[in-house]
Length: 244
Length: 244
DNA sequence: CCAAAAGTGTTATTTATACACCCATGA
DNA sequence: TCATGGGTGTATAAATAACACTTTTGG
Image (cartoon, rainbow over all chains, first blue to last red; front, side, top):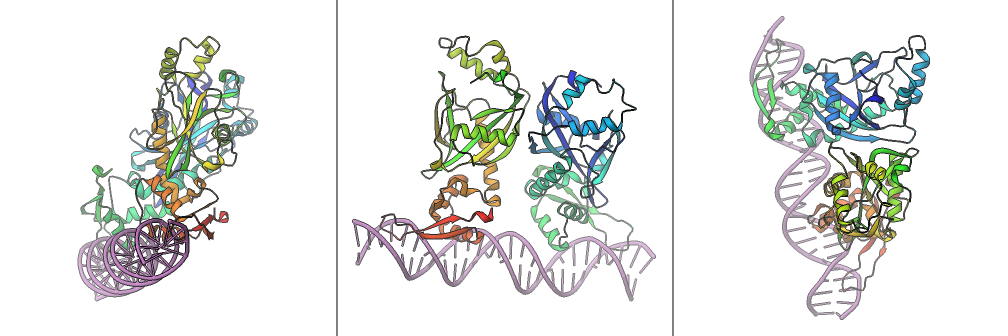
């Protein structure tokens, strides 16, 4: 990987992605940890090539970490306060990693480029965790799913970004019929309900929830799903894509 | 005014403002016309100083054209497709104004700076037209209010920006209780209803509208307004700011 | 036959819409 | 006293929430 400063990027403009996934009845966010001492967690980020659109750049960044191309994503806010910069976090990182860091990682030009004031466009993405194989990039030590309400400490304003993304997701969920992007192709009504509950962090009455969803008239009912449990087998549903 | 290229701006990043005002039962947008032959209309725009936040930059740009500081404004979308540039419009402008344009207005450096690919953050603002005295900047021939549904032809994607801003305004209107920013301090229920009708481009039943608004419990009723018309005098209302 | 979870129906409650009426005002 | 527009009350419909009951499944 070449230095950002040598690439044909738009300067001082970045993209940060909040990647939502749903697993074990929890809404999770995909968070990489940087390959340095000090537990630096940062949202998947990147810069914008001169030749690509911002949505296109976001898709590229998402594909790098998730391996999938066809992802639901949406802008949610721009973060651009004047003192917004990587500088303080990078200085702490360098301080904690003096031993390992030679001049090859952070030369002067590189440091100056990356520590300038940055405006960042926030995108959130909804993915089916079964289709995702989280991938580390060169600077990641690890990349993991964390519950949205139990995130590790994050650099800069990234924790605030997640909250802002979650809020936008809540506002758009019913309006845009996007919850299904977080589920596998087929799912039970209980799956969908628990997804809603994890997004809104509150319970919904079971019967009314079913009625509300079915009244949307966007699901098709498939065969039953026999789980082996000692109870009635639930139906499987599939989102009818012609409605989208 | 100095050349943009010599200022301490973030490069390739701009702000475009959709300024909404309400007058004569119409929702209007403040649109400057450039001081060149060819009827070039462009939204009030500007760049971001290294030392200022993006909201702050938007306020500065708004104050330039409206003269008022305390303005309601909000981001609504980022426009950043890859081929998004001033170039084709500027070339046409130069072609139509060959006679008047000496080298002083557009030197090479200037032209290159301004015609690069630009990402633009869209803001919309809501103003009380009575407090605004539209002000031309150096490059404006005129600046006028136009009905949002009868705008002049605009450069680049600025017409699309207005539509996007209007759509966001519609979505946020009830949620955020922001309509009052478009009205004077005091107003009648009819004023408010006609404002709603101009924003949503449809009629509302008079009595139900009144009930809905009063049920919000954010207005205080003042004395009556005697207009001299041969009918019952309507009450004046004022938005209670402690609710905001 | 039982517990667990699914499915459905029925009744309240709230909210939105539609309809009707009376009141103040100045000509 | 009339036309005009303002204010309010009530009936109806629709959407939401609350409650109750039946069915299927494997042990």
